[in-house]
Length: 268
Image (tube, rainbow, N blue to C red; front, side, top):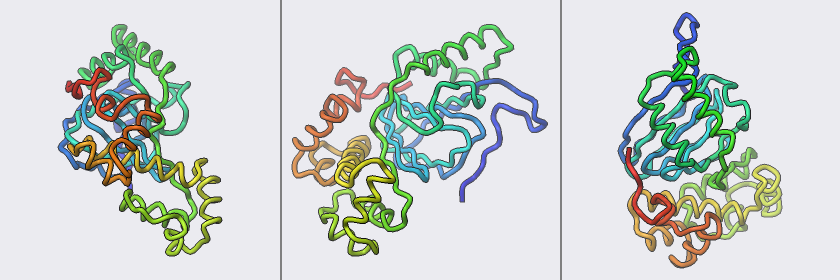
């Protein structure tokens, strides 16, 4: 059952305490934050480690030095791959009016990263204080220009298609073709293909490819070597995994999990 959190920006009597608040946490590998929701918009930033955000609409994988936007009142859980240094900002709803009303993973510029880390030195920030208002305004301005990253895995809503999804989430390396997977889902291969395309905007082959890519990324963040991660995720070879990763994200998995220069994740 999803837990609805109390507002971090309003007092119990409804008085506004600030327009932005922060929470910092260092979390152990495998730690899971159970499903919950916030009345504020949320920016979840990984200064190290990989986080996986899950909602009823799908899954978003957040590599180090990237962030995910979570609109207010979105039930979600968060799982950690490797040790994670989580930095979270909570925004008064509609403060960031230009951001879409759904979850997405974003690249974080050097300036935005430093602003997030600086904001996390405050429990709350209020526009009533000049210095704090400037910090809020700079963060909001930076968020207007963020680039989204294709690290999401949307879920279909049809129960038959979701049976296929659950089977593959349990074992992303499953080598059965769609026809075999459909034997236990209560629908034909053609029906499942249609449902994936209609409800996820991805054909089944593309969806499965994305699942394996994200699973390989999670495994590497948990400490697996490239070869082990590739094979467990269902790739025929490490080179096939690296090739697909480079095609999708423009670089190798090791460099992507570092800081963009091939070094290890930065910790703050």
